[in-house]
Structures are given as C-alpha cells and as structure tokens.
Length: 606
Image (cartoon, rainbow, N blue to C red; front, top):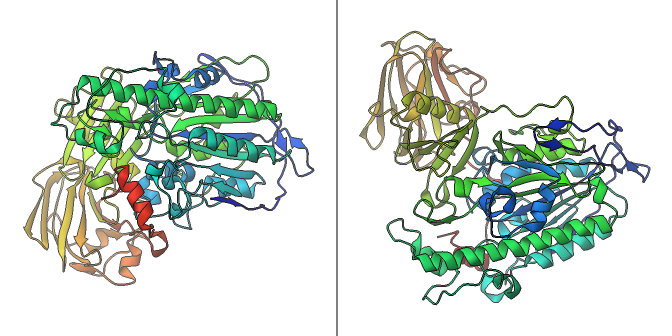
C-alpha cells in the first residue's frame, strides 16, 4: 500500500553555512551539504538524509566489521569515506520496539511499544514529523508490518509504502514479501519526483530475516552441500531454539550461507540506492545512515533467532554515517565509544539543522562533524530491553562493562566486552561493587516493570532502617527487587508483601505489578521504626500522603503517581513511589487474523 501526502512548505530561518571538517581519530568528515530553502534553491545550511535500516543484520557479518566472506562490498565502500561506530547498540532485540526507538529517541519502556498489541501513542513525536515540519519531503519504504502504519510508524511521512504487508490477504508463504530490489525501485522512483526539495528517506530491508531465501544468484556465491531434513524457514529453525538441543554443524553452515547470501543481496541494493542518489544529482548533498534493528543468534549462546536474549550477537548493530559523494578528501573514522539507537533521531535532526523534540533520551552525534564537537561520554549508560515472549530482560552497558538483568529470575550476568567480547566469563559474583553500580545505572535510565509500581527508598548517606508492608486487593503478579539483593522482601500471602532493609546508606527498592492491573495498593512505610509521611513522595509533584498507612487507588492520588520523582537516590532521605502509566487506549492494536498468522509464521506471536 502506498500513501502519499503533500506537506505544507514551512519557512524557516537560514542556518549556518558549511563548516570545515574536523580530524577525528582515523579520518576527516567533510563539510555539510546543501538542500532546498524556501525560494526553491538548495540552502547550504540543509541537506538530504537517507536512513537505511537492514533487518536482522549482525555487525560482525559485514566486511567493515571484520567479516571475510565478501558480504558487503558496497557498504564497505561507503564506510571507507564515512564514520563507522564500532559499539552501536540496539534498544531491543527485535524489530518493533527497536525501530520505534530510532523514530522517537526513547527506550522501549518509555515509548511503550514493547509488544505486538501496542502502537505508538499520538503524543510521542517522531523523526518524520520533526523533519516534515521543517519543510522536508518525507518518504518511507518498508518491508514488514512491524515498521508500518498499524503500529504508528507511518506517522509524519508524506509518502509511505509498505507494499501491502499491513493489509488483509497478505501471505508470507505466497511470496508477497517485498524483496530488497522492489523496495529500492520504489524509493528511487519517489526520489526522482522530489525535484530540488530536501528529502528525508527511510528505507527498511527485511531480507536477512528468516526465512533465509536469497535470490539464486546470491545463493551461488555461498554454495552449500547440505542435504539434511531441515530448511531455512522458521518451522525448522525454531526446533533449535531450546538451548539443550545442539545445532548440527552442517545445518549451521547451511543457515549461515543462506543468511550471508541475503546480506550480499541487500548490499547490492544499497549500492543501487547510492548510485541513484548520484544520478539524481543528490550525491554531494546527502547524508546516508546505515544501521540495523538487531542482530541474529546462531547458537552463540545456545539459542537461535532473536527477541529472547540480550547478548552481543543480537544487541550490537552496524552504524555507518557518511556522504554518498564526499566533497574533497574524506578518510574513514572509527568511533569506539558506545552509542545507541536512541541517538539516531537527534543525530539526523542535527544533520538537518533541526532541533530534537522534547522527550528525546538520546544525544546527537552530529557534533562529531563540528570542529568543537565532542565524542559521547565513554561511560554513558546505554540500555537494551525486552519483554518478548515472556523473556523479561534488561541490559546496560557503561564503557566496556555490560550487565544483563533477568527480571523474572532476579539473576544477573556481567561481562567486560574489551577482554571478553564473546561474553563467556560472567564477572557478576567476582566484582559485586561494579555489578551494583551497573544496576543503579540501569535503574537510572529505565523503569523496571512496564505498567508496574516502583517503590524506592533512599538514605541521606547515614545508616537508616527501611521497613514496610504493601497490600493489594488483588494479588502480586510480579515482584522485582532492585539491585539484585535477595532476602529483603517476602510474600506473606498472595496479596501481602513485606520488606526490610537494615543499615542502608544508599538506595534500594522494588517494583511490582498486580493482577488485576487496577487492584490498587496500600502502603505501610517506616523509617527507623517510625511512620514519616512527610518523607514519602508520590510522583513528579512530590505529593505527600496525609498519614501512614495510605492507599493508592482512585483519583487524584493515583494520577499524582504517574511521574518519577525528581530526587537523587542515595542523597535524599525518604520513599519515592511512582507508577509507569499503562498503555493508553489509543495504543492498542487490533491485527487482522491473516496478519497475526503471518507474524506467527515468523515466530513473533503465540
């Protein structure tokens, strides 16, 4: 399906002219490129931006990241005159929340599109809306329903083509999945209609996702002699998702051959797109961003596919930013500081000379092009999270250290990615102080339980005893203690939760959900054995209850609790209580039965 709208042309102040390139590590990035101003001519303060997202693409299967099978000659060529980010992280190990993070600069637990039944809320601004308001022609060409209108991701695009994947009657097994060449054809045709208008083009290639079925010409590049009983479809691959079932070596080689063939096919189409930009006269005016929504597992840590794990083979993605046709000399630059998918919106907005919208959690990488620009902080915490198929996992990376937190099992793993990039040596028990510091960093970035209650207690640096009881009219469905400490809470009954934290000098707490979700809760909270309602803070407006115990049910008390209190853990004495607002009524998605069957065939829905 193609939807095309003509956006109003907005007048905007002219921005600064081209700036000199800055030497960054291994190379130089060239000056800004021009796009059209309001008078119909290209304004040198603006530029075209092309965002290419390849589905299911592992960074370590591209030549620029050290792969030796010749899968990516065109992307490698772009990288030789671009900035290559060596430690780019996805925000989620599957498509829907990851791409939504790219388009909103928000983590999944913030934008709330964490599962199949949710779409982006109308109040969350998108990248396409941001550039459209600045006068850009916006075009999106996508090849999977998770990147399409049913989930709110078409919002802001003047032209949006999903090739029918979101419409009833679509069938993956009928060969209706748009291949990369069809997506490229449509994107180039749209570019050809834009005359001299500045463009933001979003292209999504689904091909490397299972089933691995490259065109015959690309299969021949990686011939295999597999004659076993399995093929490259989800039905076969899913049989090996159980970590206890080994993957036969010959079948693994067959899958990798097919997967690499898909990557090589997409690489050729990316080359066609770059050549088309040059032919249309946009080569020296366009920024190109190449990335992926997530990677893929081939039993690296026991499983297959993606969505359930947060190891590097799924979390680490390629990120390459460069010119199609640089003006002047341009050498490659490698950035080893970790960056995230939430950085794409502010970066692309910055390249276009547009401010990022309110609520963006990422930071712009565009200042890397400025002589005064600085690299992102090496110790900035970055997060990846999933609630996919009941795998409640969150990971945080700060510098080389990475923590994976299982929310259901209250279990952690910690790795040093500099010395252990394959994540085989769990340091969580041997380095507890660093583990706890990473857990605090994780909590500072995201809410632990979507739609759940968050109770944090904090000391002022002196020792204090925090004790209490929480009751619900329903039952406690999930309880997650913060920072991994065990033994600080006990369920006295399905509806009564007791906790005790003695001699606390920092901060701790817990999160919980109830069933039903609106069961409410009643809090009995003590500090050093005394009820201190003035030291209990609800939500962002720091509402204090009149007395203890107090209930949280009904309005306005519950409404007051839907914002995180602006307090610093470990410095402000008290209890801080808030709730992550459940998905609103406008975020529900009703999928056609045929589309649900399509997603089921890919292993997405139960």
